[in-house]
Amino acid sequence: MDLWQIHAYDASTPLEETLQALDIAVSSGRARYAGVSNFCGWQLAKAATWQLASAGPRTRLASTQMEYSLLQRGIEREVLPAALDLGMGLLPSSPLGRGVLTGKYRHATPADSRGASEHMAPFVAPYLDDAASRIVDAVSIAADSLAATALQVALAWVRDRPGVAAPIVGARTAQQLRAALSVEALTLPDEICQALDDVSAPVHRYPDHDWSTL
Image (cartoon, rainbow, N blue to C red; front, side):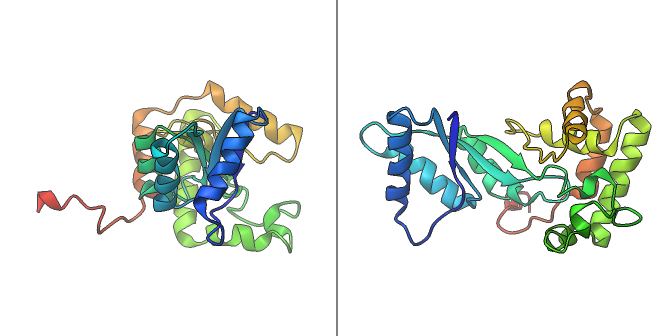
């Protein structure tokens, strides 16, 4: 395989043991690159630093997969800065905010959507609040001004963020895949990016605030 990623941090297993499994996979030719997924900032930094500092042939972590979208920018607090500093590529999952950023939930829940599924509804529900609605409305306004779709605008925003290697799209149909691939023809103007940044900005306080300005 091209890339093998640890799906989540396992607190019950020594990190060194987990990383050694990645070393074996790469050194034996079973994988070309190794990465992690769903590691918080300190976990990511610890794992990547271990691989860089340990003696012997160790596999440098190439990527980290995390949920990232206009509706979920939490990784900007610690994970993304760590990935950038360590030279790791970010693979954003759910770049369309679990489908909400497409605008299909603005007025109702489509019968064939994840939000209408008994199993998947709890997955979508966190992004159906008032704060999310304001962001979805902003994306839709931007799309109208660019003669584009909300999907294209939301996906282009993620694609062009610092450190992003490639968004992971969860297309369920060929039509959805074609829609996602069409974003390659779209470049968001700086003023649109800034407006979307502003409306979706997460609240980061201590210790992220630049206290030297006080």
